[in-house]
Every structure is written in C-alpha cells, then in structure tokens.
Length: 296
Ligand code: NAD
Image (cartoon, rainbow, N blue to C red; front, side, top):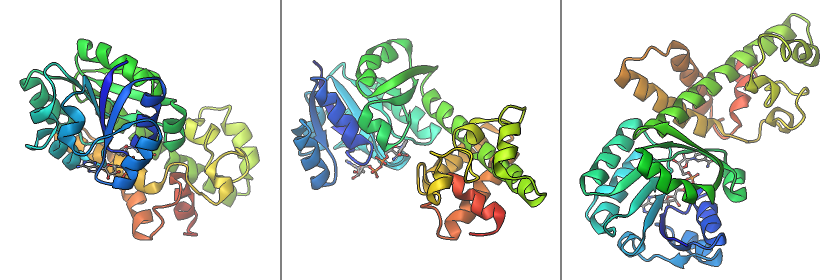
C-alpha cells in the first residue's frame, strides 16, 4: 500500500483515483470542485482540503489536469506540489499537455530532488473506469520503475517511451496520425460512393488491401461496415472532435518548435477546426465525414 496524493478529479481523474483506492492504496484526493472531491470520498479516497494537505504526506503524487498552464501552476506555484511534497516523493503527471511544459515541470521537480514522469493516457472515460488505460511514460529508468506498479492499478498497457516529455511526444504523434488517417479514410469512402461503389463493398476490398488502417477497420467513418463505430450512432462520441483538436494543436505547436514538417497534420488540424467553427466539436472525430460529404 502506497500513500498517494491525487490532484484533478474530473472525467478521467475521478475514476483513476477510485481505482487506486480500490486496490488498497491510501489515496488523498483533491480538486477545485467540492462535488468532485465528494465523489472521490464516496469511492474510498480521503478528502484533500488543499494541494498542500494532499501532497505533504504522500510518497507518490498523481495529477490529471486539463492543460499545461494548470500543470505548471499546480506543480511550481508556492501552494503547489514541489514546494510542499515530502522528500523523495515521486510525481506522475497523466494530463495531456504540451511537450515544453512537461519537460519544464519535470526539470523543476528534479532540480529539487524529486523523481517525476509524464504519463499521458490513451483510452477515454470508459477505460479510466475499467482500469484499462494505456500509459505512455517519459522519464528516467528509475522513475519509470517506481511509477509502473502505480500505473498498473489504472491501466493495462504501460510503455516507457524514453526521457522526460517523451510520453507526450508519443501521444501527440499517435493522435496526429489517427486524426489524419481518419480524414483520408473519409475522403476515400466519399469518393467511392460518389463513383457508385457502396461503402460495404469498398470496405470489404480496401480493408484487406493496402489502404486499410485502424480508422477503417475498427472505426469506419462511413455508416454500415463496422456496427460498433460512432458512424452508426449519428457520430456520437467516442472521442470528440474537441479532444482530437486539442491533441492536433499540441502536435502542431510541438512541430513548429522542432522544425518538423507536418503538412498533412496542419491540414487535418484546420479541418477539425472547421468542425469547431461550425459548432460540431461535440461530435465524434469520425464525424469529419459530414464535413467531407458537405452535409454538416
Ligand atoms: P476534466 O476537465 O473533466 O477534469 C480536469 C479536472 O481538473 C477538473 O475536475 C478541474 O476542476 C481540475 N482542476 C483544474 N485545475 C485545478 C487545480 N488548480 N487544482 C485542482 N484541480 C484542478 O478533464 P478530463 O476529461 O478528466 O481530462 C484530464 C486530462 O486527460 C486532459 O489533459 C485531457 O486532455 C486528458 N485526456 C482526456 C480523455 C477523455 O476522454 N476525457 C482521454 C485521454 C486524455
């Protein structure tokens, strides 16, 4: 049993903290929202009144926050984790944030003698509840070895992606690829249909030919061929455009900093941004099919 301080009890963090408590860890949990803390207490966590009180006695601190600015503030402000944690504690940030913030916060933590990893997740609220998340972890080997048993209580696949920040790199590079292949898949189904080839026949051919991808075989954006796909539920998420767009923007920001050419990633970001402008960012990201078909 490990003493854990958990900060950020939203859609993802709430069930993750609950899973840590469920396997017997001693979890103190806090959030800006009192009702989120109440839910965590109902799920077996102790109430953390402040960040300071949540981390001061913890051997491990886990954070699950919206964006880089929240992570920077929660770790580096006077009220925050680094100023108030116990000597030798390990920090795990599972938020999806920009690579620069992840690396800066880990450097600040290590500077004060703490171990820290970035460990963003793949898998949504259902995987967080079921404890089947995939973690992509960045940080030195010792920190990863300490983090792994904690992550195993919340996830199924735990990867070490290399040095600090590399978890975020793996996450945004993967999601840029996913967001881009989804649009290409929409274009192909739309083209086939316009030329008189129905979705099922095109799927049967292309899914066993060189055009196949996860976007086609598991998540087909054309209604019909994959019954469980959001395309058969009027594109209800799933993984909403708003969340895909967040990751695509993080990828572009990182690409500019690294001078990496990502012309298709940039175009894909622009198309998801059009979905946002049209007020459709609550649709599943495969709903970009509607934009390609011209029926948004
Ligand atoms: P959320 O908005 O539901 O939860 C974030 C929580 O952080 C909120 O409860 C908020 O009150 C709390 N918070 C913000 N600032 C705080 C502070 N200073 N102190 C304490 N608490 C604070 O977000 P979420 O859906 O749980 O996502 C969390 C992270 O996980 C994001 O980075 C997101 O991109 C990533 N993610 C989400 C999903 C998903 O399906 N929801 C999937 C993969 C990754």
